[in-house]
Amino acid sequence: MDSTQTPLRRPPATRYQGSKFKLLPELSCQFENLEFTTALDAFAGTGSVAYLLKSLGKQVTANDYLYSNQLSLRALIENQETVLTDNTIDAILKPQPGRDYDDLIQRTFAGIYFTDEENRWLDTVAQNLPCIAEGNERALAYYALFQAAIAKRPYNLFHRRNLYMRTAQVQRSFGNKATWDTPFEDHFRRHAAAANATIFDSGVACRATCEDVLDVNSQFELVYIDSPYINGRGTGVDYRDFYHFLEGLVDYKNWGPQIDHTRKHRPLTRARSPWTDPRQIQTAFDNLFARFADSILVVSYRSDGIPSIDELTTLLQRHKSRVEQIPLGRYQYALSKNNRSQEVLLIGR
Image 1 (cartoon, helix red, strand yellow):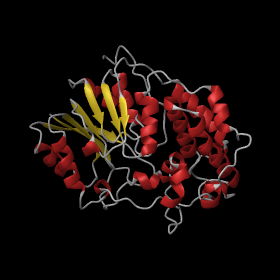
Image 2 (tube, rainbow, N blue to C red; image 1 turned 135 degrees about the vertical axis):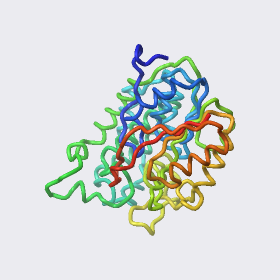
Image 3 (spheres, rainbow, N blue to C red; image 1 turned 30 degrees about the vertical axis):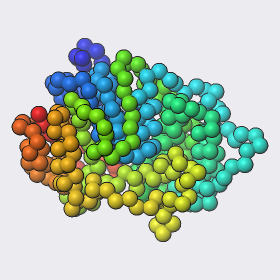
Image 4 (cartoon, rainbow, N blue to C red; image 1 turned 180 degrees about the vertical axis):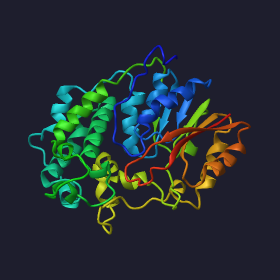
C-alpha cells in the first residue's frame, strides 16, 4: 500500500500510557519497506499499531496479557463490521427496573479515583454491560467505558489515590479540569462514536488474543514488539498496576477477592512478570527473539532503557543476521520527566 497516494486509516486517539499513536506515520514508513502479510503485535495495548497493520492489509494477531486490552483489540482489530448502537448504549447507561445492584466500587474505592456519584454510575454500568451487549458490540462498549474512565483520571492512570487533584480548589498548572468534570456518560458516548467511525472490513481475518506472548500458537512473517519499559533506574512500567481498575470492571463479579486492601489505591494483588524485572528482562527478550527467530522482528524501544539499545541489539543479533537501529526522535510519555530519551526502532532480519 502506498500511503502517499491513499491516506492510512487512523485508530481512535487514546490517552493510554505508552501508546504509539503519534508515531504511526513513522512506523508505517518502516513497515512498507518490509515484505510480509502476517503479523503479530505481541504487546498490543489498545491497538494503535495493530490497527495500522490492519489498515495496511495485513493479517494481524493483536495480543496483550491484560483482558481489558484484549476487549479493546477485539473491538477495533478483530471486529470488521459491528458498531455499537444508540439503543444498546441507552440500555447500558440506565439502571434496569427491578434490578438489585451491587455497590462494590462505591464501597471499595470511595475517595480514591472518582466522586461518589461517578462510582455509583460505574457500579451500574459495569453490571449492566455484560448482560445487555454481546460479542463485538460488548467489546466496543467496554472500549468506550475504559476510555471514559482513563479520560477522567489525572495522568490517565490508576496508580495512586489522587482524586484530590481533581477536587481541590486551587490554581492548576497542568491537567484538564474540563475533561475531568465532563460527565461519564458524555465521555462514553463520545468514545463509542469515535470507535464506531473507525470500524472497517480489511478483507483479511484479524484476531485478538490474551496470552503470554511465548504461548501464542502461530508463526508470523513479522512480529512487532513494544514490551513494557524499564527505565535506566530499574523502574518498570507495570501496566497491570496502572490499569487494574479496568481489569476489575471487566471481571466485576470476581473483582473483590482480587483487590489488595493493604495498598492505598486498592490495586489487584501483585503478579510478577519478567518484563518489569531488570534482573530477568534480558532473558525475557532472548526467549522472545528465539521463539520468533524465523520472523522479521521489529522492536520499539527507548534509548535510556534496561537493557540498553546496544545490549538489546546484541541480543537480537544472536537470532538475526542483519539488525538495523532507526532513531524515531524524542517522545515523552505521561509521568516521564526525561525528555532526552529517544524512540528507537530495531529491525532484525
